[in-house]
Length: 169
Ligand SMILES: [Zn+2]
Image 1: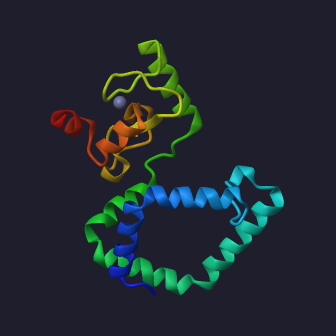
Image 2 (image 1 turned 30 degrees about the horizontal axis):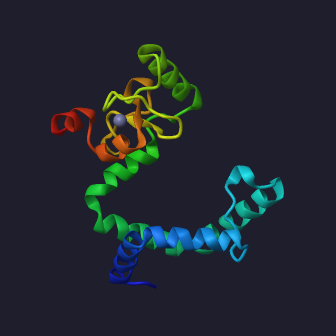
């Protein structure tokens, strides 16, 4: 079991050396020394089943450990418990159709996909769906709470509401 200190250290190490680590891993994948971790849509049905099986086995085998971990986590993070539950409850699921509508309406309004935070066009691949009121602050997955933003703008906004974000920027 790793201590908090070790965890913090390795997290910091990772951030400091992110580029080197990524380059190293990329090289390992390229030379085939490390198997690429498949995304679920790249897996065959068989692989998917075996993954699900091993996950559920782990889940069963570690039931107590997991519950203890969660209890400890909640005890340490009382203020975050509410946001955790809010995210889990989901306040309605983000469904594909809603997302599609948000994209379509954005394009209809601006002529091209546009970030609602900085009002600049969004290139393909740097788009993201933002929750105007974040999920962790009890925002919903309804269309009225969703908007298109640059990935960068979205992560800069973080856990703030749109109002809070725009006031500061
Ligand atoms: Zn933007």
